[in-house]
Length: 207
Image (cartoon, rainbow, N blue to C red):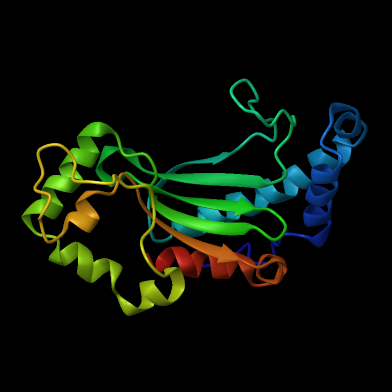
């Protein structure tokens, strides 16, 4: 059901992000705040449409659009603004977990899905299940449609076996992981395409 499929990401929004990257300072941002608000509202409407589509085949608890302001307290990079728009879509409640992510940045846009930061208990549970039998998990991540759209599983991992797990376990490559994430990079032409909303949803459906 793509009722809102006429919603797109405009080239003006990407151009604005490029300008912001070149003029990443408060004076320029304040002078262009009205333009920023306009693009932010358009991209937010797109994210809302993504959420509506996700809810046709998953249960999304909330969509969060990230703020443009950077937290520079612990960063060497003191530029005050991000040069991208991003939104995350969290699955409903304790029984579903995980989520989806969409990142709009000229030349560096991407989709992602999976578990970014599983808490200690969840991570332990996932590892225990993989230790017991990883075949179902492997079958899932090796499904042809999923591989075609998303490629291989990515995410941070430990250099060695986690505490309490056997180094020589045949599935240690999966057990070592701290994140279970799929990432799909997007070109600007894909992002600006009239069918981008549908393409995002098809990608998420393939997971």
